[in-house]
Length: 318
Image (cartoon, rainbow, N blue to C red; front, top):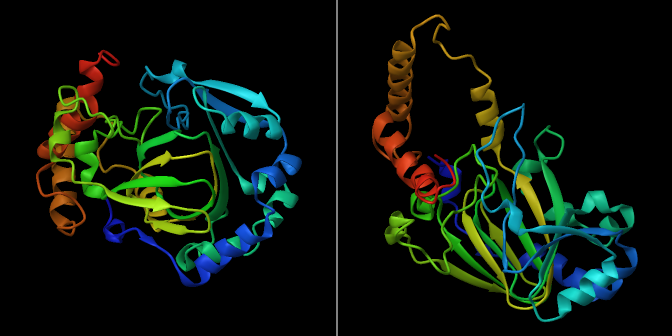
């Protein structure tokens, strides 16, 4: 279900990446006090519990599934100084902020010189606009980003505070009960890896032991695309990462843009059988390490059990 590229493993980086991170740290221009003076007003996520998770809007008019957890988060506008002062206090509430550096203005971006050198060469060669970008992160102590994967490679630099990363391979997708692609929380795990509910998420019994990496100021972690990461701020934190778009989304978009070789006038049952046959052919022709072995029906059953059954059991969908 995930590409071969995802078999590259996470690693802490030394050499040039570490030197860039140390230069940023020594400059002091990305400290809490320095950023308090240059950041604009921030749109901050606020929660009474520590678990933060991205949500997405539907694209091209797509109708997404309901999001039962959507109302637990408040979006609050704050001055940067007020945000950092409140984030230093004992939680709750838990505060969480992120934004692309490019959106924050040239002054902020100039405080991370050579950030482009943290991007993967393959992404820098892509002709697609936005193939690489830098992101600022800041969070209260205890704040947690629930397990999720990105479709971009991630070079993560810790600037203030300490973060724990719990890393799972792409093959853990079923055990993590990832939200369906049609859900606002697509790419994120339904399973809380810190307190798994085995009745709701029975496939978690096969979840492998996480690789744990603790990142201190000036250290750099590389997370390959499609690797799941559950991230806990052990103290108030500031971080910058560089995303490098992998080739997979481009290939997927090109594939999905192709019209299906199924006439629109065919009866629904015939379309269903044709799609099943087409998916079987795709699975059978793919490299064995690209997708889990099995037929189209077995793949559909796995997806239903992993991604949809818990939502139905909890009453989020009918």
